[in-house]
Each structure stands twice: as structure tokens, then as C-alpha cells.
Image (cartoon, one colour):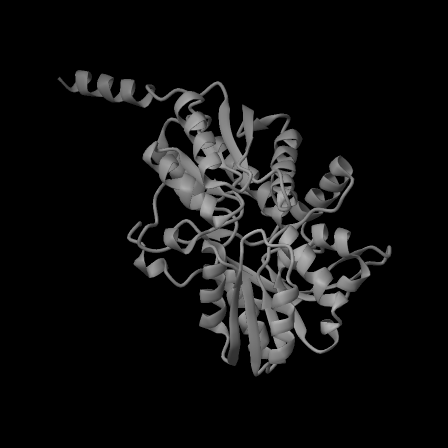
Length: 386
């Protein structure tokens, strides 16, 4: 009888064989005014795969790329194809929180790991945390918490908040208000994808705040900063933005008027660690441009998946083992220290940066100091996962 039990156990152990390849369903915003975000995430993810010899975790990687055009219905159609027909092992690439909320439930229902390289909606940090949802980026309120904390440290007594009226913008407002101790003069919301901010700038000028915190990703941020500077408001109002509000994509579009702009972020191009140096050099060599924070998170996402697939020795059908391997985050992140909280969102530092000129004259971020240390999120106690 004992021999039968042993034989059965051995059969079970070998029933999950190493896969012959790993399949990635990569859905991102690759067209329209915000295409630069998805493009940077895609390019950095593909760069990591290329540097690994076309493999993730030792398995050949098939990365299927689809453009959601910032439309939830498009993203859902792509996800359905990747999940049902292509039988992908991971879904990743998504930029915006409203697209995450449209796609992640389908991935979770299919027991396919959803790994976010950017948006980290608050819903998934707390009571709705899920074994199949990972954020390799940040909780969506964290950057705005860091901005609020920075303003506190500078003694800024009143400020205006501005963001698009969608899930990500609402999370940003929650994070900023949680941390900022001064008077919030106004809380302004714009249309997602809006490019003309003349009316909002007029209102802000009339309110005369000491500082303005703006959460406007991609082309929205490019246009706002151009219009803010052109209106002469940068002389009177301190503008603070998340990393992506003053990143290389915006620097390329705006140029010298970006100098002196403060931002907060989880990564900076000048981080002096081996993984980041390798990434920045390889990205510039491959794409002839400097990487953004979006690219940094896209690259880390690929490294995270690579580390997990390697850890399970290619047996990616063993979902429990693969989840444990993802949670271990056994890779060298470009941001330095990286680990997951129990809700599978990062615990990490957030830094103060200023846009300046490097020794070679190029405009880029310079890290000034740490704003938040080992910051998780406000909702982890509501997550029941172990």
C-alpha cells in the first residue's frame, strides 16, 4: 500500500512539466496623445527580453502586443483573445487605471497572473487584493502622498490639486489629501486626454496658491507644462509633479523651460546602482533616447517575470509555486531596494528630484533626497491574503 502512495506522489510531482515557452499578453496605450507612455513600457519590456537572449526565466518568450487606444472596450477584446485563444501565462503592459479595472477581473477569473507595470488602483491594494494581481510599479496614491509630504517639508501653506477625472486621478487626490497638511484651495478635475488647459490656468491664477500639484500623465502633462510656462505662472507658483510629469518624454517636448521643476518618484535616471546603469545605457543604445520612469517599471516587470519563471524552473502551470516565486521578487531592480507587501504591491522609497543639466549638458532628473522611506500603502491591513 505504501508503495502505491509513494508512486502516486511521484506521479503528481512530475505531472507539472516545464513549459516549452512563456506567453505574454501585452496590452498598452500605443496610439494617440498618450502613446509615449505605452511605447516606453513596451520598449523597455522588450529590451529586457532581448538582453536575456529572447527568453524569460530560461524559456523562449512570445510577447503579443496590442494597442488599447485608451479604450476599456478595446482592452477587454484584446484580453479575451489573449486569455481564451492564445492561452497566455501573463497579462501586462497596461498604463491607465480605468483599463486595469476593465481587464484585471478577466485575467483573475482565468487564473492568469496580471502584472501591472504602471497603474496600481487602490481597489486591489485592500479588500480586493488577489493572488493573481501584482503591481511591479507603485500603489496609485503613493506619488501623490510623496508630493503632499514634500510640500509639508517646505512649509507650503496652501495649494491647488489638478488631475484628470478618472480612477487614477481620483486615487491621486486621495493620496495627496491624506498627506498634505496645508489648505487645499481647490481640487480641480479635467477630462481624461484633455490638451487645452487655458480655462484651468485662468482659474488657478485667480486663486493665487503657493504651489500647484498636477497629476497629468503623457501628452496631457506635456501640454499643461508648456501652457503653464507660456502663461508666465512658473515665476509665482511652485509646480510639483509626479516623476512622469517631468520625465524624459516631456523634457524632449518642452526643453529648457523644464529646468528647476520639482518632482517625486520611485526611480530616477541618475540612480547609481549596477542594474540601473546597465538599463539606462542599454535603453539609450537600443532606442536612441533616454528612458523614463515608465520604461524603468516596464523593464523591472520583465525582470520580475523572468525571476519567477526561472525560480519554478519553467513549470509555470504550477500556479501556487509561480505566485510564490513572483512574491519573492528575486531580481535586481533598477530602483534599488524592492520587495512586495502582502497585498503584492511594492514597499519602496519615493524620492525628491529636480530637472537639471548633466555634465554633458543634457536635461535630466537629479535626485535630491528621500521623501518617503519603505512606503507601502494605506489599505494593506484590509487585505486578507497571507
